[in-house]
Picture 1 (cartoon, rainbow, N blue to C red):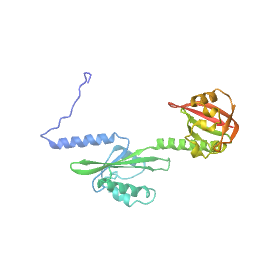
Picture 2 (picture 1 turned 135 degrees about the horizontal axis):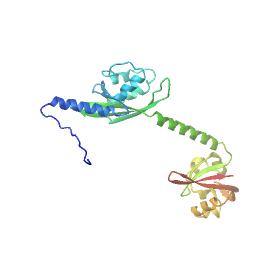
Picture 3 (picture 1 turned 180 degrees about the vertical axis):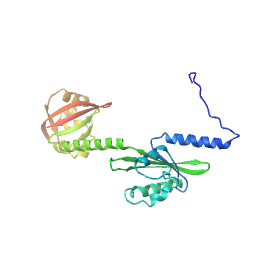
Picture 4 (picture 1 turned 45 degrees about the vertical axis):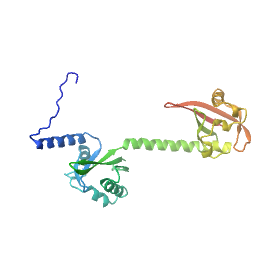
Length: 264
């Protein structure tokens, strides 16, 4: 390509052993380049190969085994597991048997694997392949700790925001560009005489009495955006009306255009 020389491997038909050795070396090199901790199982569930990431993880976690588990029956270990991973291990064992039996093609499991020094999470992915007429399994343990930490932080942040919104007296809502209520806090639902679930998804015009109730959505939202705490007449679920201040603001989340509304 572009004037560079490329060496292409050509199998030697006169030396089949070298072809096998070359194939084994190629496969091992490919597995060693992966970040996931990988083990290969034979049809009995015994570990017949591991990659460099598997070995590095073992070395870094004081798993003193010069063979790195090769020769160990992974299926049997899962079925007899006790203690820290006794909940996940039976699920893994069951999945391995089902994949060997052709009842399923793959298996995913997220699990914690905390050390003395840090909290860690992994995803186990098991798939089946065939080699020289025999069934083999690939077990890939992928470290997802950073992703999990972000998820936990986002979940904590969401819970804090929800706790604040659930306990303020003002009605707070988000409105889609099409004028549909996407979220409301309990105060907003109470103000308008609905429960939260029945109010979400309704048009913003539902909250207003005539004549604003009859306006096209874009005109109503435009009016609210261009007025500062304008007093308008709201309408409850039972038809009763009341004066309210409705403040609206436009926000952008990625490519989405939304509006927030605050009601007093």
